[in-house]
Length: 264
Image (cartoon, rainbow, N blue to C red):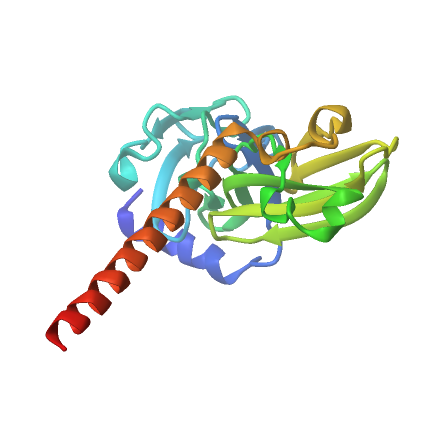
């Protein structure tokens, strides 16, 4: 089949059936199969699997019972990832990544052209949320009665981060297509016996971190216990720097006054 006819079929489908896409959602690293059954087709025509509007991936010739896979397109994006079932015509993309997300077209070219379309969404694998003591709130007046916490994740997109008390949703925050870091605060009483969990989810999967109140929420005498040794060291260093700066300014002021007196 000529390249001209290939583009004719693609253009035909692009106009027809735009709203009939079958949606497939999958996580990075998994495989997805775009199902089709050639046994239901009785015409001895040629079929093509395409990606987007202009990329030909597979040609299937029913008349000669031959097929060809073109996986070197788009700078090798599909190299060694396409598996065709030559009995059914189904196409499998293995070890999928976000660059394989998009629209896949199965085109029947000939006197009576027809088409079938799939919309594939690929989601990054979710990290496990991290729950820690919220040191920025450790000196607030409410910290005497409540334990201030924060649940956080880094470099995520198309996700929702939520706090749950048992099965009840307390709060949530979402991000769409931007890859950013998320954090969600929570305050509980030190003696709270309820179960809390932080959940990160996208449309196809989720990761849950349960709160251990006994480990993270306990009364404390100093910032080492409240915020951890790293934060305490940082605070001590900052305090020392402020003290040194104060001494330097005081010495400079005294010398300036003595110099003025000597000149007088």
